[in-house]
Length: 595
Image (cartoon, rainbow, N blue to C red; front, side, top):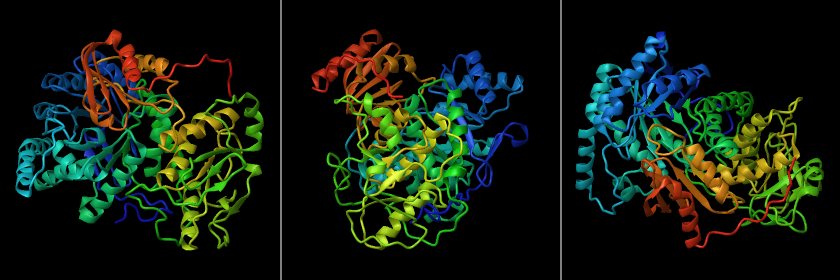
């Protein structure tokens, strides 16, 4: 199975075109040779027509091409008529997507008014009970028939009205039936989506697209690769467009890094027809990141140099870190083997940051590049390595983008039967002018994150970011976002939408102020229960909107405390962390700054 023609050469996946609205009048043609489409989502109550219109116009003004609006009830779905009518009256013809969870009746109402209906196979026809049940083949077939009875009416109506459907599975909301047969796995996500696709095709409906979203970039990458490989295996006419996104990415640098790792890696491999960057921030800021990220892909993907190598140096469908021997970087730090992935800096960066590093700091240089015993190799040429304990990297100036160069290096080492540890670099060809910090962040995240998701890399070096302290911090943030190291509290925070039961930005800031010193603790902050329990699968604690002004607290997937008044909920979360012996008191902050 293959998800792309080559991991070394960019070829955009050929997808069928789908029509969203009227392309001659503000609509979109997605797929084929058309540019990747940027989209975002409203954060307000769907019943607030005026604010919904205002937020839509603000998104369109910054380049958003598709706008999603949640429709949690039939009443909300019905109000989409008023929102769309007002937008059209104002000359705004941007396609609108109704976001549906749990309520087929809401989908049947929404499809009357909007160009796209997004359904989540995990909860469209199933009420999730986290029940453990074994299904024999006959029972499973009966379940599929029941699902078809729920979903087929929407397919028939969408076909009649010339609408589009997004079949969007989420790692956090797979049905009990899928969970019991396939587990909480990429395969389960793919099978869940394909069940709905088969129903659509049975009714000769093809105006649909897929999405496979997770808050874990590595899981998200595996899911999309597996989906595309399965579609390829099903036949040439299964070439449906793909929507890319990392769900619950969070805010600030962390949200951008997670999204860049997941979305950027797949775009560089030629996958993706539309993207959404999910940030716990005002929606127009998502579009800025989409625009910046898309602009980097032609520079980071190899579309010019043909590579004769054909084999994959990694398993694209199951993450496994490349096996390497353990070696010493210096007298204090080792890498490779079972060691952590290490952070290397240049001598210039070390000289800037070293005087400001305190003994207990987690963010610190672990080796200096110029001091390393390292072999700098050109993977486009034949080379010999006689010792597996030799640290290797790609030589600067090689005429390849960094992702391709390091994949090729790993492939050639594999052919030679060598497992040398590899130092990853975010760039091997330098810009004449220093990059803007926001661009340096995206590029480093895509390059290093993509390779880490491939299982390649034992140490990393960030040089595209000109600031010494910023480059050091960025390296650690990429490792944390890729799930390779934990040096600070990890947050899974969803973006706001009309289902959100509290102000996510305010509450996230409040929780961070109380917990950001808890190294290695993962906290999920969810506005509602749609993805809450599932996306918190690998979180230690969860803060979830249960009802207006009421919060439920979780340990992992398990709800522990219910209906806590919002005013008390952050402190009750702290109490819960203390009860589970994960709390430490914060140290007094010193006036230090890494610049």
